[in-house]
Amino acid sequence: MPKGADAIARFLDDQGVDCVYELVGGMIVHLLDSIHLAGTTRIVSMHHEQGAAFAAEGHARMSGVPGVAMATSGPGATNLLTGIASCFFDSTPAVFITGQVNRHEMKGDRAIRQMGFQETDIVAVAAPVTKAAWRVETPEQLVPMLQRSFELALSGRPGPVLLDVPMDIQRADVPFAQDRQRVKPVPGPGVDRSQLDELVEAIRSAERPLVLVGGGIRSSRSTNQIRDLLSALGAPVVNSLMGVDVLPFANDLRVGMIGAYGNRWANLAIGRADFLLVLGSRLDIRQTGSETEAFKGDRVIFQVDCEPGEMNNRVTGCTTILADLRDFAEAALPVAVACDLPDRTVWIDEIQALRRAWPDTEELSASPGINPNTLMHQLSSVSGSATAFVTDVGQHQMWAAQSLELGHDQRFLTSGGLGSMGFGLPAAIGAALAAKGGPIVLVAGDGGFQTNIQELETVARNQLPVKILLVNNRSHGMVRQFQQTYFDSRYQSTVWGYSAPDFVAVASAYRIPARAIEAEHDVYEALEWLLSTPGPALLDVTISMDANAYPKIAFGRPITEMEPFATPIGMEST
Image 1 (cartoon, rainbow, N blue to C red):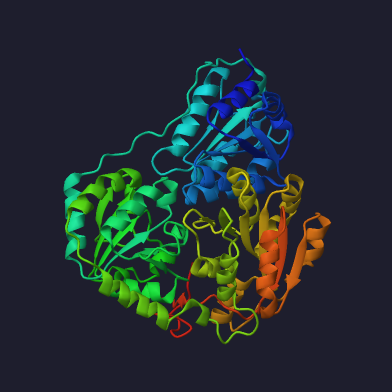
Image 2 (cartoon, rainbow, N blue to C red; image 1 turned 90 degrees about the vertical axis):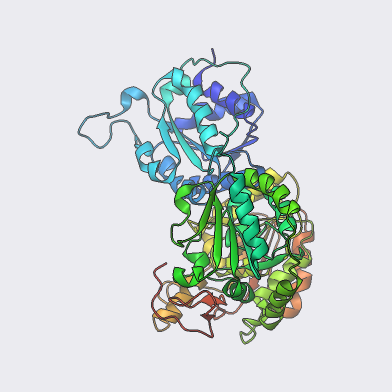
C-alpha cells in the first residue's frame, strides 16, 4: 500500500490536476515530496499562501478542474482563507489541502489553546466559507474523503472544500485502488417542461425583453449551450460583473454590464424592459442597486439557478426555475426554436440609441489626462492574442468591465462576491498555467497590486506570459471616490498616508521588462510593446487621481439614476 502522501499525489493525477500551488511548510513536506517523485503534477511555489489560493482559483476558472492549493498548519492554513472565501462566493471549484500536526499532538478536548506546534483547528475556522471542511481521522478515510471533496466541489453550485491531513496519516499506509476514475459531479434536478413552455410564452408576449447573464454560466461550464439558447431567443442580453465574458463584444445581442458601475445605457435598458430572464445571477445589491422594488417594478422576472436560496431572495415576486444551467439551456433550446418568437430589431435599435447617447468614453470626458475607458478599448485592440483578461479589485476593475472588447473565446476573470484586492496577479498566474501558452492580460491598480506584489517573482521564475497593465492613480481610488461623496473629500489612508513605489524599478528588480507612460499620445505604441514583448511585461500608466468610476448608481435611487447626474439619497453601506 502507498503511504498517504503518495496516495494524494496519485489521486490528483487521476483527477487531471496538472498544477498544485503552495508555499512550503513543515506539515506538507511529505505531500510535496510525493508529488515531486510522482512527476505528473506540476508544483508551483508561490510566496504567500493567499497567492497560492488565488492562483488555484484562476486555474480552476480557466480549466473547470478543481484548483488545488496546499499549505502547512497554523499560519499557512489561515493565510489560505481569503482565497478560499473568494472561491466560495464566486462558485469556483477548488480543493484546499492543509497539513496538520500528528494526531497524538492535537489538543482534543483539553482545556488548552494549543498542544502541537502551529496546531490550529482550520476545519472549524474554514467551515463558514467552504462547502465542507473535514479532517482525516484515520488512514482508511483519506482516499474516500479525497473523492468526496472533489465530487462536492464540482456538484450543484461549485465551491471550495478543505481537507486537513495530519502528518502521521501522510506517512501511514493507506488503501488505494489502482483503477480510480475521474470524479464526476452529482447530477442536478431535472427541468420541468411546463415551466419552459411558460417561460418561452412570456418572452414571446413581451415587447421589450432582456436576458441577464451572470457568473453562474461560467461556473456551470454551460457557456456554449447558453449562447445557443440566447441566439434562439433573440432578446438583447445584459451581463453582471461576473458575466462579462458570456457573450463576445461583437455579438449583436450583447448590450453591456448592468449594476452599481454598469454601462449607463444598460441600466437604462433595464428600466425600460418589461420582461427579464435571469440566468445564473443572484441579483445582489451590486446588480440591482438598493431599491429592489424599483428594480422589480411591474416587469415579469424569471430566475434560473441551481441554488434555491438565491431565488426570490432580495428581489421577490420572480418565477423561479431550479435547474443546472447546462441542463436548462439544453432543454429550453428546442422549445425556443419551435416557438414563433417575434423579431426584436426595434427594441435592439432603441438600446443602441441609448448607447450612442451615453458612450462609456464620455463619462470622464472632463477628467484630464488618459481616459481609462478609452484605455480599455485601446488595450482590446492590441490584445487579440490574449487568452484572458484578469483584473484586480478597484476602479480599474469597473473600467475594464465597462469597456473591454472581448473576443469569442477570451475570458474575463475578476473577484466578485469577496472583492479582494490582491486577487489579480496570482489569479493571472493560475490562468496562465491553465492556458498553457496564450498571453494573459492583467489589469491592476497601484493599490491592489501592492498587496500581492511578491508574486512578480513567481511570474519571472516561470517566465509566464502575463502582461500587466498597471492603472496608476497614486491612491486607493474606489474608496477615495467614496470619501469624496460622503466624507467631504477627507482622503485619510486613500491619499493621505498612502504611497507606492517606482513600479518600473520593482519589475526590473524581478527581471521583468517594464515601462511607464503619462501622455495619451504614448498609449497605443506602449500597449503594442506590452503585448509583443516575449514573456512577462509591465506597463505603468498614470491616470488622474481625480478620475472616478462613472456611471455609478446613486445610492437609494433606482438603477436608472446614476452619478454624477443624480446624487445619493443616503450613505451606501456596501
